[in-house]
View 1: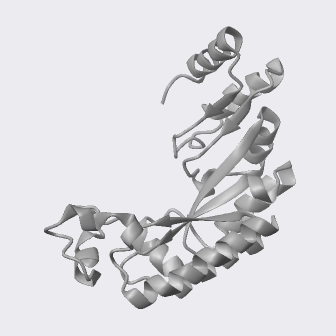
View 2: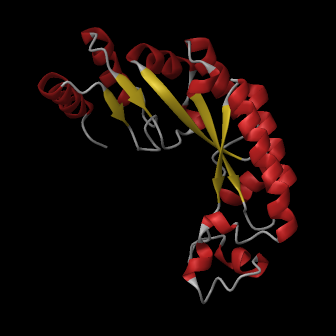
Amino acid sequence: ARDPRQVFHEILHWRREHGIRDFAFYDVALLVGFEKHLGPMLEEIVRRNLGLRFHTPNALHVKELSPEAADLLWRAGFKTIRLGFETSDMTLHQLLDRKLSEGDFERAVHSLLKAGFAKEQIGAYILAGLPGQAAGSVMESVEVVNRAGAMPYLAEYSPIPHTPLWERAVASSPYDLASEPLFHNNTLLPCWNEAQRKEFARVKARVLEIRRSA
C-alpha cells in the first residue's frame, strides 16, 4: 500500500496544476486498513475542501464498508460507488471466495444510504453465466440488490484456464473451451445452454426496468 500522504499530494498536484476534479480508484481493496490508509487521506481532503469527485468503478469489499467509512466517503465527495455483491446465493459464495456473509450487503447499502448516497449512486455487480448457476438465481440476486436500495449491474462470467472454476466450466460448456480461447468470450455466456441464455434476456430486461425507475 502506498503512503496515504503521498497519494494525497498526488491528488493535490493534479487539482492545483491541472484543474482535475474527478478521480477514480480501481483498487478493490481500497477500504482495507481504512483507519490507517484511506481514512486519514479523506479526512485531509475534507479539511481542505478541495471540491473533488471520487469514483470506484471496481467493486469495493462489502465487509469493509462500515457506517463510519460510508460517512467519510460521502463527506469527501465520492459520487460513484460499486460493490462486489456477485450473488445472493450463499452456497455459491462459499464456492467462489467466501468474501460475503448473510446480511453483509444489506448493512453496507444501509450505511451508504444513511450517509447520504442516492440509490442510483450505489451499484452492485452480479455475476451471471457461472457453471452450474441458474438464470433464476441471477434474477433473485437482482431483486435482492433492488430491495436493499442499490442498482444491479450484470457481469457475465468468462472462463479462465488454471482458475478454480475452469474444470467445471469446461465440463458444463457446449463449446470446446479447452481448444478455442475465442469461446472464453463472456458475451457468449459459454457455460450456459440456449434455454438459460433466453431466460437471461428476461433478467437483463428487469435490470433495465429497475434502472429506468430510478
